[in-house]
Length: 296
Image (tube, rainbow, N blue to C red; front, side, top):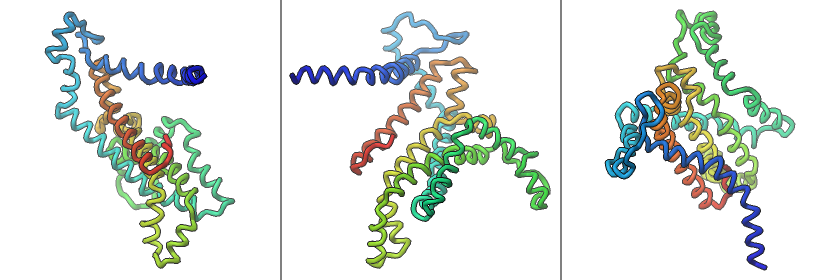
């Protein structure tokens, strides 16, 4: 009887494992195998005539060793610090917004304001990025207002700079920080805040020693949801940064499409995926230690 139940359980799980295998494990395995190959003279893949010698010579790791060159490490470092800065800025901006929405906004206005946070999702991210191009260019709305008000005598050159990329990243990822913070603050037990105040703690002390620790799962979820897409972003840096601000996502996209060096692009993509998976593992372990369900 127990064996029959075990078989039934495996049969129920079979569709899930099939979907994971087809849409996750199989592409990941193909990317890993492709990263060990070498580019052909005219693109494509270079044939491997002697597999044993190819492995023994270490040639299968040539793409990974190439990714450690100074130029690529510089691109990786730029991607990392811009992703970290984007995450920090969205947290600094998003936490007060989520706090006010969850704890200070009357119920009749809460749904409306929360809907305004979600409104950007109703429009294509690509269209919203193009809108920022029209706002930030030298003949755009921002410079038009500054020149019209007499605050500037020449247009600001913001477009195609790292500042423009940062503005686009923060704008695009901000809702992903606000929403998990709001969910965490919304279920906060307010009696704990009142008890801390009754015991003599000031507002700053209550916020630092009670509110932030109790909402740390939401903070962790927001950090993961913002940092991961920021690290692999290429649309914002391509449109708002141009050739002056190449990130890892742009490098991978260029290797797969323009340079037609699929093995090197696959190696870079696999390294990025490995970093993301390690971050997700760290987040899952953190949530398990906190006794919370993983929000991803």
